[in-house]
Length: 255
Image (tube, rainbow, N blue to C red; front, side, top):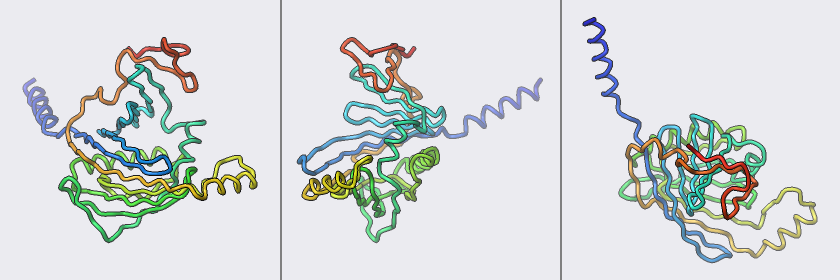
């Protein structure tokens, strides 16, 4: 009995000595300029283990790689949509039409953001929205860089059948500058004549330039409920917009 008690005590000490997986909270400010003028927005990204939560424009996206689920959450209506991850059907098709594979190349420039050094990498590619170029400054010394990199690699592996994998460098992108030119936008199901007409219409449209910079960075343990849908929220299905009184069909509140 004494040996069992001693073994249990040793095991308890060993478990207590293992550091908990810390999370990282990234706050970004974004400025976009284009035909629409200037628009400013902010975004918060939380990562811990195999889970991520993105908050932008009052909406939340929770990605749970452990359970292969993604949740699109609307706190203003206390509703959410649950989809499989990787996505399938129309959602997968929409994701596939986004930015394709980016071939990042290390540049000769570095920056300092929030007191952390980062190295610039450049890349280019084509998406449904047009041709794009990007320069991102990745830091491996910033708090949470290892956790963020591990999640991004796991995410890319899950999505490899939907979106081509890219050679993104390790680290957190502390700053990003991108340009999207819509002159070569290619929409699906257009005839050659329609495509030619579309490009004529877009020829004089200003490129969209976007600058993103991390304004706050924290490494800390995040509660488990950070990555779950709040209790009482109602699930709604894709394509079924909520009415003033709630979801259009089959309300399924979270318990």
